Length: 351
Image (tube, rainbow, N blue to C red; front, side):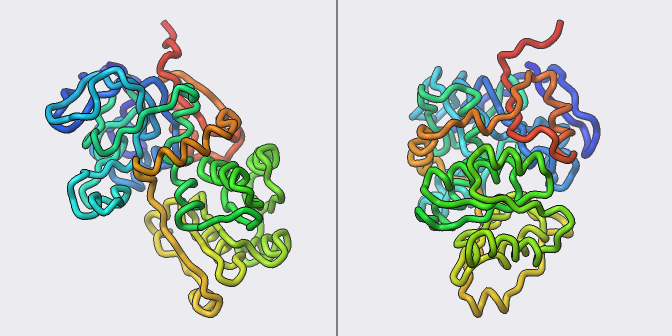
């Protein structure tokens, strides 16, 4: 089967033929029809998030169940499915209590094992993790609901407890950020989008942002002051959707009293412990939350909300597998084409 493979951190990925994986007990093999290109894939490619090598990236996927492993009861073949990027084991205490997104024995396609930048992918603990994709969503739309949209949904609805009429400040108008923007708008909230790239801010305006803050050249305090001015006193919810210490700090400083900060963007390496104003957190009773994906059991509510949205508005480019290596590398470059990139496996390769 064809797959995008990289052999070492930072080494140019390439499309090549690799063996079709056999299916272990409890797992299914899915024939991938579409998959998103996420900045988390880029982090793994450059070595910020160590993965086994050689490696196939990809974790935002939709496809058809092709083969079923021993012990799988819910799936028989032919179902069109997606999956959370965090797959819980389904049997540990954490999973049984309803939190497979933080399962200590989790698997993640594209991280713990080969992912969905391939014609086929293995998905483990299938009875726990697979979700049927509604017929109302096409494959590209379903791929756009991958980790970025699901992460933003849980960030705002569970951790942020966002309500109609409240303000949310979205720091970073990339895939997670624009997903948070449209989800917040669908919930009746107001949104201020913060980014350093004018192309990203223009995209946020088109998606319905009530206000934008051009952050290029500003300190976190200046960004926070601009958010406070735009929201008339500070955001009820702030989300660092890019994963940067400056964005995390600006988000916390831009909250109103008893506001909620949600850390959705990955903070890795030297950035993993940003300096936050804990005196403000204590005095204003601010809340700080991490968020890590969405459990399969919570997908129905997200899908109901997604049915009210124009998911295609979140997608910038649809490419074939041949163009995926360049798209992966480009995730580390400044934003020039806003919107998610989705790989459509049905686009034929050049002869």
